[in-house]
Amino acid sequence: MTAETNHPITVDSTISLKGIVKAIFKDTIHVQIGGKVITLPISNEGKLNGDNVKSV
Image 1 (cartoon, rainbow, N blue to C red):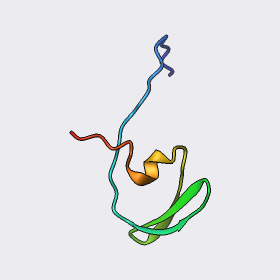
Image 2 (image 1 turned 90 degrees about the vertical axis):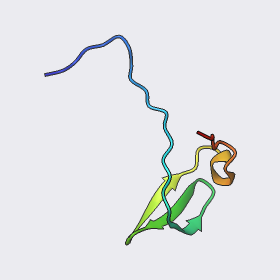
Image 3 (image 1 turned 45 degrees about the vertical axis):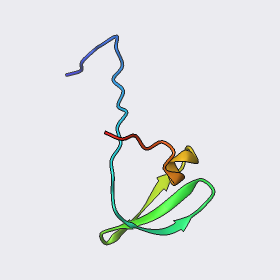
């Protein structure tokens, strides 16, 4: 079963996670959350210094 639509679905949301930064590279950041280290891509330098943070 498939749903057909002429309107694409987009999501633009922010989540907050607390973790320990293990490493920062040119295009990725490695963060330990719980017992796992996850790799996050850095697509915008503003994301590292909080320039894109919005108050609610």
